[in-house]
Amino acid sequence: SIDKLEKYKRFNITEVWFWENNQLSLYHLKNGNYEQINQSELLPDVDIDLLASCVLMPYIIDARTAFIKGIKK
Image 1 (spheres, rainbow, N blue to C red):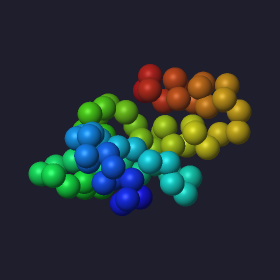
Image 2 (image 1 turned 30 degrees about the vertical axis):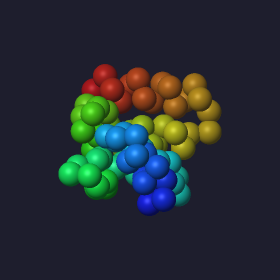
Image 3 (image 1 turned 120 degrees about the horizontal axis):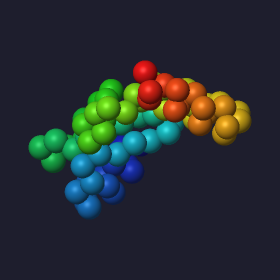
Image 4 (image 1 turned 120 degrees about the vertical axis):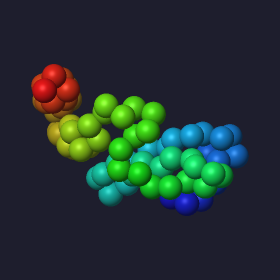
């Protein structure tokens, strides 16, 4: 949320990820303000959609397997 972002801004946290409504929301600090982004600027090789889909899986072993398979592509 915007209120939470203000707290992170005080500590100059450059990138913040929130899990909201069963999806990841990413924000990056630029010129003193957070901008919502679709891809991490700090971890550009991380597939955010893959990560989110794995988080939603009910069994951790299935999530782990799917994530590892996805990053090996």
